[in-house]
Image 1: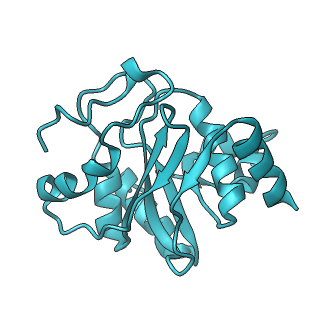
Image 2 (image 1 turned 120 degrees about the vertical axis):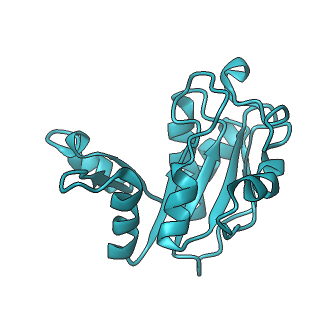
Amino acid sequence: MKQSIYRFIFCRLMGWKIIGTINPEIKKCILMVMPHTSWHDFYLGLFTRGIIGLEMNFVAKKELFRFPFGWYFRWIGGTPLDRSGGLNKVDAIAEIFKQKEVFRMGISPEGTRKKVTELKTGFYYIAIKAEVPIIPVAFDFGKKEVNFGEPFYPTTDFQKDMKAIMPHFAGVKGKIPEHGFDFNSNSF
């Protein structure tokens, strides 16, 4: 019933569609979501998750999981990130992957909704450390599509791997296009 309501709002009222999906047998992965130019990306992700019907997750600083909003963030798939104990973010998140049976983590390599000229690389090194695939996910406001790519297993050659992944985002426009990462001019 919830899926039908999500689909009606997302597809019929908002005019969006979902291209592709996640193979349910892939229980752990990095969902590389781009471009990230607006807070609207958050609810698009929630609708997408509700329509596909698979658990999708995110991490955020542990302070966000305190009262009164902690229950809500956990309910929508959030996991608090505790960096105490000397672990860096990559190691701390790789540890979360090890502890969970299912963990499909959405992350934006841009790291902000503002214009960036370089992507943050943590998502890539988390995938390597956790031994999980990267699934590119394009939020295309130009076509009103959420487009899932094929799983990609990183090889540890960042430049080569980015050249293989980035074509998925060719021509994609964020909500605020001038804030979007320039997929075409980057020298991966």
